Image (cartoon, rainbow over all chains, first blue to last red; front, side):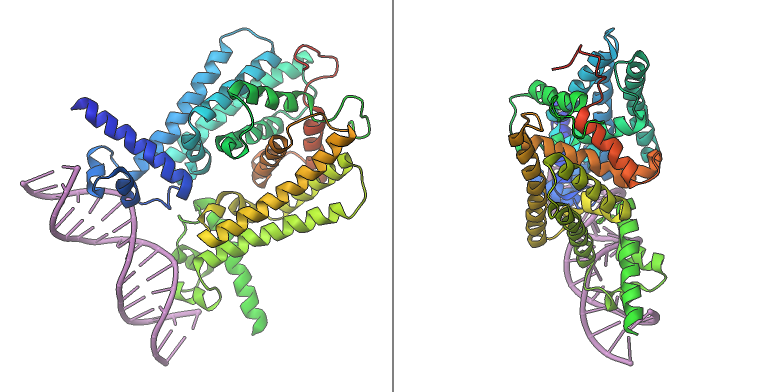
Length: 200
Length: 200
DNA sequence: CCTACCGATCGGTAGG
DNA sequence: CCTACCGATCGGTAGG
């Protein structure tokens, strides 16, 4: 029985991810959700506390995954470049392993209640800070150019985060290949070496 | 009288942009909107046809602005690099000049009705294609590396599109400076020239 | 631009 | 997990 309850709960979460991604949190009703699962709307409340609680689970669950991947990178003592490359790869893997939940994480966090919204923004800022620290370290060591740290990390995340929708551009074998292609652009740019026309 | 109606209509649009950005399209009610403007909810319908019509106006209005900026770039006969640089700058200027509307354009287009959704996706794809053509031209000429065109352009847009929220990272004087910083990253990468550790 | 109001739908609860 | 149902709110219309 315990097992069944857990299964149903995760089924609700998974279906919610799918629907929230498609029609947005506010555009998805509990009746939609129940219908997709095959139970009556009122029955949902045997497994979940509220609609917002589902959103909260998804958003903070993803945050936990992102931090977990990032911390795995930090414990190794690599150079800033390698560390950043690995952090990007970790971030991408989390997205690809949870495509629907990622879409909710990126698009629907704003529907969190005031209290959760504050917590969410703080967590996100902390995560960004982690990446900024790596970049800063690399700039100090001279491995990265003298760039605006915050601007660059914002661009970096923005640049990666569309990958939850990568299927529409299906092109690479796996997360690693995708990550490599991405890091190549971000580290070295798209301009050919022998082209100096617009270089700096 | 004609003028007054137009003013009120654009006021509705502008206020809708603000609210949709903050709470999402589905999270914003016509009553919210009316209250912010200072009229009764029913009065809105003297100026607009429906809630979705406002969203439609915003989304397709932005699309028109993006195309307009892009076409200005195409009529000049520049090299692919210069053309891409100018197209990026044009795109950024449109975003910065319509920050709220851009947020709606990027986040809330999925709330469009089925028919408008199809039209919207087609327009967006056409716009992306325009950028892809420039990149392709540059690859053929050898000015750009042999990169996956679609992947790169998706990354490019994703990378730029967070700029509607640039105020949280207030750092650059104007759109041109922002555009230059951005193009520098994308064209040349963040890695220092004398660092070969992770270079390809 | 307002008052008055419509039917539909919302998230959620009571009780079994 | 269901039936039955709650009050609140939704987008929108009629008529002036």
